[in-house]
Image 1: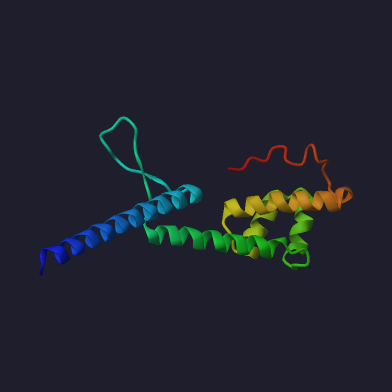
Image 2: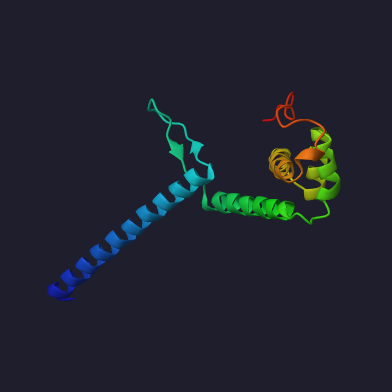
Length: 149
């Protein structure tokens, strides 16, 4: 191969490598941003005083996005006012039977304990706005003695 053509190939190879490296850096930045936004950065051991944070693998990122999608779908379903699953739960909420309401939410919506507590809080707020007169306790005392996560 003539020297001029060889030099052209070298320049093209250098350009392609630089482009590849830039894309790799961009992908690493995207992974780090996603892990930070999803709250799945993990600590990695190191010799430095500060512990560096490592990004999760692509499969872990996808799993967390799917988990959040499932949780969002569950919450959207739970928000529908005409959802028959809420009829009995609403009575428990208005009668200040929070533990029973959480159990019913977990069973009715197939959700985690933390999500059930969050749903209870959201539903309580909505019901308190719509039907303030139907609660057995005042808004000031409803959550007294109830401690969650």
